[in-house]
Image 1: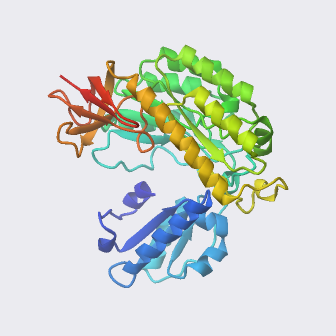
Image 2: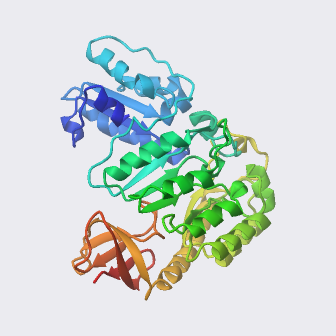
Amino acid sequence: MAGALLKGGFFLVQKPEDADIIIVNTCAFIRPAVEESVEEILELARFKGKKCRILAVAGCLPRRYGRAIKEALPEVDLFLGPGDIPRLVSSLNKLLSGMSVPFHLFPPKYLMSHQERLLLPATPYAYVKIAEGCSNFCSYCLIPHLRGKKRSRPPDDILLEVEALARSGVKEIILIAQDTTAYGTDLPQRPTLEDLLKDLSAIPSVSWIRLLYTHPARLRESLLKVMGESEKICPYLDLPIQHVNDRILKAMNRRYDRRHVEKIINMARAMVPNIALRTTIMVGFPGETEKRFEELFNFIKWAKFDHLGTFAFYPEEGTKAAKLSLTYVPRRVKEERLHLLMEEQAAISREANERQVGLRQKILIEGVSEKTDFPYRGRTPRQAPEIDGVTYVRGEKAKIGEVVEGLIVAADTYDLYAECT
């Protein structure tokens, strides 16, 4: 959207109070995301009638609620769903000229290209979306409805984008999609994720490549082989397993069982040296008895994921899981289970971090820190931005925007400390 706006003659300002147009890009995947989106819209609506002439809302919130959201938020002048990005500029121009734009959402079939991109300044990493939409239809998930079925970008288009990012100084490329392991199966030549990774690794000025959102059902030995053989692909695997009880996994429509998850974990650790494993866990899915939660809890103790995120099940309207006749888990119990898992994970994370002490690691320096004794902040290949911990760095060789080598000298529950001398 930002790239399209710049091409259309608009420019960015740093503060909402200085903007003629404010655009809120929303998420509506689960109830807390909906609530956060609405709160942000209402907060920014207070600038209407001052300098702000147009308040627009884009993303999944309009797509999920349709005309109901228009009636609920009369402060908003323009609604755009995931399929409406191509008409963003023309719609804004119409509104600025005094014309009206009727409420209408196109089907979510839009797919970005390398030409539509704006980089934030002084950011040494960039997300690259290799596909849009999802065709997995997990029973608790609205994404196929909100974002449409899976649509992979042609590999040549992705390569052009990454080459441009590398020329601009980006050191780390983070590949994302709703399901990265499904990449290419819908394209005529059926390119594979493995081939894409090899091609990206061949770009000289790319330092790191990170892969997020891999689906356990599609994770292949060949992918782990490519990861293990490449010095540029971060030894980092984001593997959202959601649960391990076979009955719950089947009710979730996840298309794998506990034995498969165990096999992947063992294989990843055997094939990719010093790999960091991240997962996402859902608690409170219908039918999660105390015994089934205990099975999940004991599995987390066994698997020892380096990073783990948890969230509670919400019966989202429009999903199959919302209609399940299985026993619902009370909110209080879900909160207790979340707390137990994160308490256990904190101990596991600290233990994993302490194993890094004494090792030399590459560190991408991202900026200054708030710690006077470790004045720089960065990440090792084992840490993804925004979701994992960071590495605090000191030493004369630390340079913002560059990959340096440092000795890990200390660790706490989520962060590392390093010296670069």
